[in-house]
Image 1 (tube, rainbow, N blue to C red):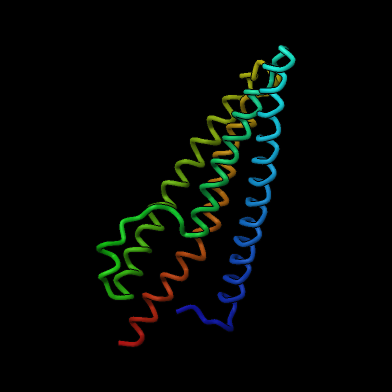
Image 2: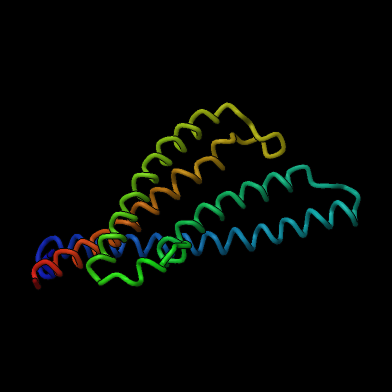
Length: 175
């Protein structure tokens, strides 16, 4: 079990603080993007149907914002424990067994996120020469949502994994 008063506890506290801060930043970014996207879509509809002068960049910008909102929303859901899961079997296990299941689950998610980061970053780099026709920016900017959100999720996973290890090690010391 990691000592609560030693260096590992201070490191754990710092990681938790970074995770909490990233979660707050992600939530603010999502709220701002949702508000901005709603305003932009209303404006695009107004220009198209009231002024008969559609905005060339309206749909493209909304799509870009939706990608970032979705990816950051996944990180927020992971931090809040809101991802779907099948708890019928796990809820019947004792605390230590549940911790083992959660640890394996978190580690598998971590492996997936590392793979997703690698290929997401690779795709974002490759997309540099692809220009969005209306916004005239590289497709890299929306594609960067994938590696950025995976880093945030990996940071969120670290305290979760450490908590499960504490439960497992704590249970072993009690026996």
